[in-house]
Amino acid sequence: ALARGSTFTVAPFPRLRLLSIHRMGGYEANMGSAECEAVLSAIFAACPVLESLSVTHGQMSTGSKKRPVALQPLPTATRCWDDVPASLTDLSIHQISLGPDAFAAGVPALRSLSLRECGPHAPAIAAAL
Image (cartoon, rainbow, N blue to C red; front, side):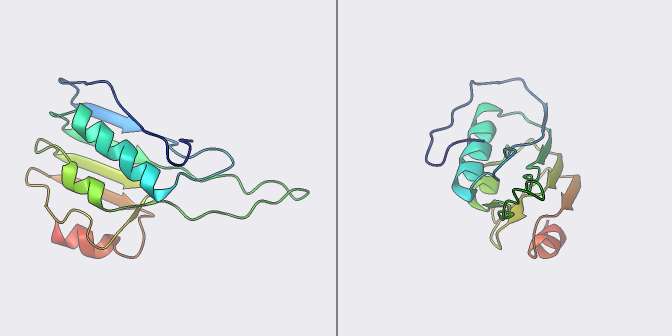
């Protein structure tokens, strides 16, 4: 997982149209909300013609019976969704909570949306898009 407070950069992928990201979180910890927003914003900036994105945070391990670990909350991402490329038509988000103001700028070209385990605001956000 990305260390808290770390700067995250992505090399430019000016022609990348399809991206699938799985297991953003670590085995022993979920990614923090600020780090999740930084990663997604950097990806959106690096991929200006992105058309299809599937992103799954993943769930941390809760340890074993001998060494249980408390389950950390999933990250919440809100502001980064305003940076999605205008070309985005297909979006699948799994195990990332969406803040109430996520997608405030809209996603004009969006044709397909899948939100799974994205928190209590997901149904209203999906209806608005």
